[in-house]
Image 1 (cartoon, rainbow, N blue to C red):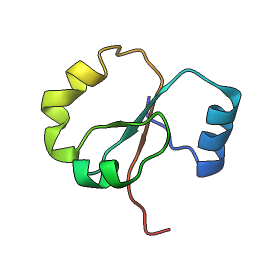
Image 2: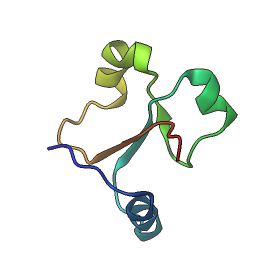
Image 3: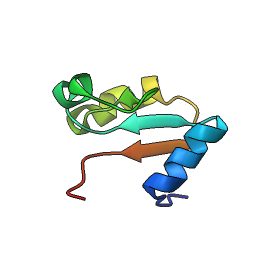
Image 4: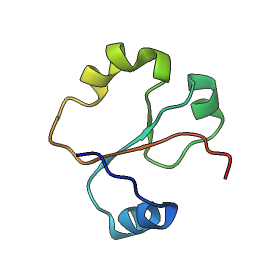
Length: 70
């Protein structure tokens, strides 16, 4: 089930050391410029090719983030 969490909730997960995969869905150049610690990059144009390799555990807790105007 997909759910939305806030930035504060993400920070709490990170601070508590929870086990989850953090995925940035921005182009590789943006990821290499700056990304959250521990995040992996899954560019939108490569989801079909990379997701099975990068996220093989279908039961894993996954948090996905991208750019936002706010």
